[in-house]
Length: 119
Image (cartoon, rainbow, N blue to C red; front, top):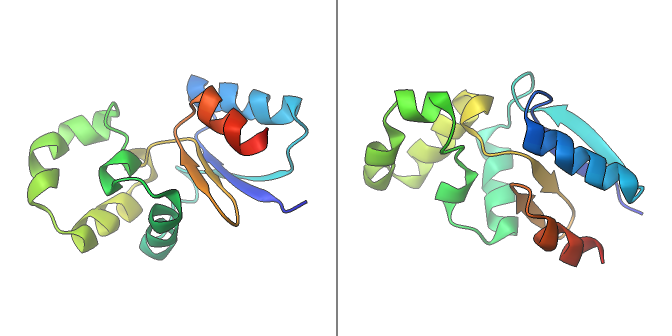
C-alpha cells in the first residue's frame, strides 16, 4: 500500500479529527506540519492539478493571515503564479488538512469525501 502524505497543523482541531480518522482505518501516512515545513509552489501546483479543485480552495479562508492580508478582495485579481507564490510563502495560508496520494489530493476534511477515497 502506498504511503500518503498528510499535511496538517497539529493544533487545528479539524486536522486532529482527520488524523484520528486515518488512524482508525490503519492508513499509512507521512505527517508534515504545514507551519514548520510549508509546501513549495511546485508541490502546490502538482497537488492543485491532482485535486481537480479551484485554486481558491487551497487557501485557508478562515485563517487570521488570510483576513489580515485582505485576500478575499485581492485573490480574484491575482494571477495563478502569484497565488502559488503566496501560498508557498506561509503555511498558515494553506487550507488543511491535505491528504496527498498518488492519484488524488483531498483538501480540508469532509468525512464523506475521504470515505469515498478509502471505501
